[in-house]
Length: 527
Image 1 (cartoon, rainbow, N blue to C red):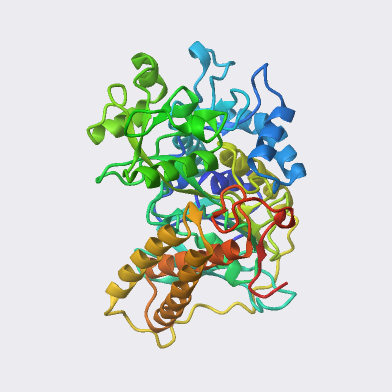
Image 2 (image 1 turned 180 degrees about the horizontal axis):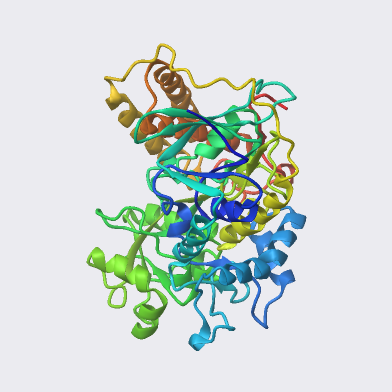
């Protein structure tokens, strides 16, 4: 089936929904979701949105905290734009019905949380389920718009960019798999927005939902869009450690409200690693936990809130408390066992301040993009703010994109591909990629580990490419293809950065180097 629209949006998290709402009324808008529309990394976001509301806070302070966390790689102009736009964007969400937690029930006074790396209380939240509340409000708004359609269970296969290797390439939409029928549609549009989220499933252990397979970065790179800073993968310090738990995140806000990390002996160890102790930036905390576990041989460390008032813990963290109880852990009575896990990519498709990638007609917003906001390490709760600000800015310029002709866009052809009778190959490769990425390209890296990872990855890419062309497409195969492509980009970028900075720590280059105070940019076609 051939489908024409004015705006094709891939992803239904905060970035995609915000962009859809902003461009509604300008033409036909299609939103694609791999699963149900509510399934996204946004929906799992607990902590909140960083923004300046407190009388003891300032834009300058938030800007400086972001620059400090970014270890010299943030773009100061981008940081200033994002920070200064924050209050207006949050007010707009409230107008749309988002119910953020307020102090003593006063609607006009937001309850501001504290998180690591922030010099003031500035985290706007909805208890400990902020993302879920924002998605609820935006989905209700978007579903009511007459010119916006949400196509669930539809996964983008490839972007449509005729002559992708040439300088005059233009994105004209995407080929899209209906995962319920197996049909592949040709969807054409003058504006294609990648809001496809992150890539946590590249790693064996992650806080991300199953849909986070790096689809947007992989598709963009294949058609010539520049990518940057893929070596900077943020590992969230505290994921619940339990054999039956899958990606249960213990928000950084728990430490912000007084939670203390302890080893098996009960000793609070963060003072050994940073003057801010448990409120140190995430990269510091994740590396500290990793070092404590390697030193002791223990499987996890513990996050202790038993010294805090029980009523406060239950009111502030009702969902985290409930999730822990599901696994037999009462966080008010005993410490929570935690480990780091892949959480957020600071790199992605290179964009300008209005969401435009290096391929005309192709936009990117949210975790899939590299705007210059995060640098070498994302400051906690800046990611949701980034989605709001840059989706709004992208909508402001998207109407100016000229409508290209679609006469040169062919419909999808199956060719000589046949149904697969070797699906075990896909599941085997899935496990293998994620395991060697965890072991060799994780929190702490070395030259030897990176070489080993690249050797295995090169062979894996050959095998996956052969399988892709020989057999009918499935969502599992597409996701495997994408995580493998993204894994290659992470490995290449990590090998190019011969220093340790922010989220990239290489034991063979233990310090930072001024010669590498720049972005790591990769392009398939070199221009």
